Amino acid sequence: MAGKLMRAVQYDSYGGGAAGLKQVEVPVPTPSKGEVLLKLEATTLNPIDWKVQKGVLRPFMPKKFPYIPGTDVAGEVVEVGSGVENFKPGDKVIAGLNVGIGGGLAEYCVAKIDVTVLRPAEVSAAEGASLPIAGQTAHGALICAGIKFDGSGPQMNILITAASGGVGHLAVQLAKLGNAHVTATCGARNLDFVRSLGADEVLDYKTPEGAALKSPSGRKYDAVIQCASLIPWSVFEPNLSPSGKVIDLSPGVSAMLTFAMKKLTLSKKQLVPFITSPKVENLAYLAELVKQGKLKVVIDCKHPFSDVGAAWAKSIDGHATGKIVVEQ
Image 1 (spheres, rainbow, N blue to C red):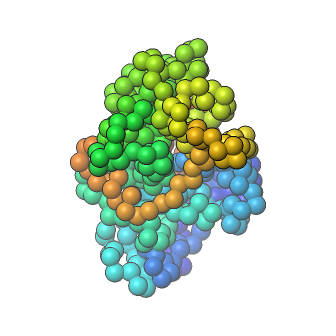
Image 2 (cartoon, rainbow, N blue to C red):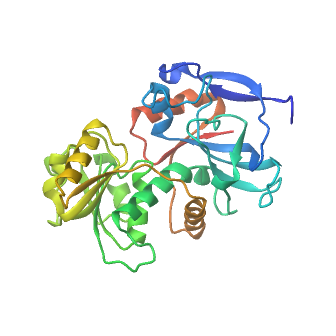
């Protein structure tokens, strides 16, 4: 497809929010060795997308400007690079792109085969594109917490904050698959929704009990999957079991200081900064769960490619129930 142009969304500098995004035409990329070229059907947004634009990871990301954001995609293979034997044109796939390079908000993108899996026919493009970051973050954080998905481990008491969001709603379901007792927090409008996902106890985070994160049944948490922001350690600590830990998915400076202090003092209660490490076998496992109906991906909203700005603004707002999808 050398020389062909495609539609894409990009930005040229840090900052600007939705207004900083530009609809452009750029050349269709060519797959290198070990890569496939995808014609995209769906791209989902994650907080990391607008955080990179905001400059949170400056100067490391993005690798260069102009930058096409978007990492979590589903589409059809239209071309394969050299050395690719496990994919062919026509295959429907799910892929997670490198955050520093991006490329997902476009008509076409290239994906490395070690982050690409076949998408089962029973899994929609929107569902598949919801799994690379959100699904693998929820899955990986629960493994870090000690959950055994084969059912072999003891029942754990797990708290999941911001449980109605992109990561949280998947974490609730996965924790239940791992035989955990789940306490969850969310806003008042989503209490019934989070219960429907399988949570055993649900707290409105704006009530005194919810703000204190106290289990209604008096349980102490073996682990917390911290999907929310700006909750200090002092709120978590009295609610933890003697060797409980907080898995922080967006650790800031305060969280890193707490992590260091707990390590230095040999505390049994720990704060664990968590960064997702994508693995193709985990992505395939999650896709299979969706296929089997054991994991439900909830879509907050779908936006056409021409309206990416609205999807971007919705993500920045931070109150989506489930995932935000951009469709071709």
